[in-house]
Image 1 (cartoon, rainbow over the protein chains, first blue to last red):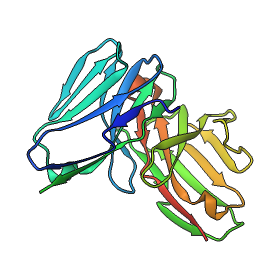
Image 2: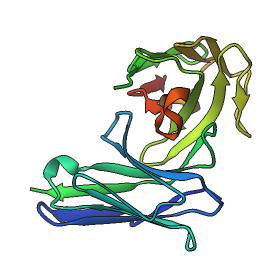
Image 3: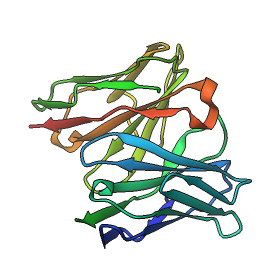
Length: 111
Length: 117
């Protein structure tokens, strides 16, 4: 089974609203990262949270991590049409390890 | 910031031919590079991990003779899809890791859309 399962699979909101995306994983991790992908493009790193951290902020982004539940959430506040993209969580098990990606969430922000 | 250049961005080739995709780290040395494949509306599936100067490590189910990976320098890795077939049509993305940046060191290329006709 795939590490990193996001929900919902697709999310459509109005500009200005907050968007919350969740990710669950199955194995022990060293860190969890969120990435953004615009259609047909590569991935852009958004935020990283270490396994010993519970919450982290970066601009309009807020990520939480609950290692007991093996889950993470990404909150985008005051969404903009430009936030429309696919969002992926990825887990890493160590500094030298590969990343394992979830299925992704398609976010549509209506102007 | 770290930049990874991936070329070409799009390629159309005939069935049976080979296609080479390049991945370059422009401003850092990438001791490790990763190659992913992504089908429409799906996640990234890791194909292989390559370390400079050594053979690539392929994920289970990935044919190493079909997807040739070369990581001859600290700034360049190439993926060659040999004897391409329509089912190889996909979006291929590379990622280069800057060891000096630890867990933050993963930078992705912009991807290559391969269409085999």
